[in-house]
Image (cartoon, rainbow, N blue to C red; front, side, top):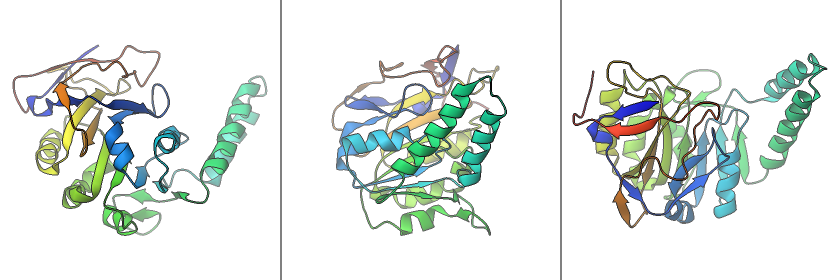
Length: 256
């Protein structure tokens, strides 16, 4: 598959990119310098995969808060029940139990899970990005953001707090209808864009081959840089059963 990015996403690769998190979906390329300079990690969106948070701690021991209201005791119970209903596939039950015990073992002490969705000021399990950052006194916070479209609700807050952010990887969804918003964010955020990876689980717009789901990595501390390297040797397709999207750049900044 081929994808074409608008010109405003052209970047210089950091020369210290490392893969943090598991292979395929769940792992991201980030600057090692940013990781080592961070003293707090906030993860927005975990589902049943906290490999990024866990691997981050292998590089830098920092407090962690992960936000995701979809993950709860009921979440794990449903997984176990589905596995029990398929007795001919015992590996499913084993995986469900292993995931639960991994969760209980990882989220304790300075590693916390908050059952909240971030982005909306509303009743129920919701909080704003201002509330999230208000709980942390650190001025070197690393952010991992994959919130299935809610990211657009708090981009202004990220810009307002850019001086407190050491590095960030964020997944943008429905990029076709939010392209101008993404452009404005990239231009105003202040941290350097050092990597782009399209999620091959997402669609590609037929008219101009724009990937509709993209992971963007921003860096404060990456020192040396080179021309953009696509694909990076550490890149992996999100869906291992499908070819990754091969990227090039358009000469125009915005396509509509």
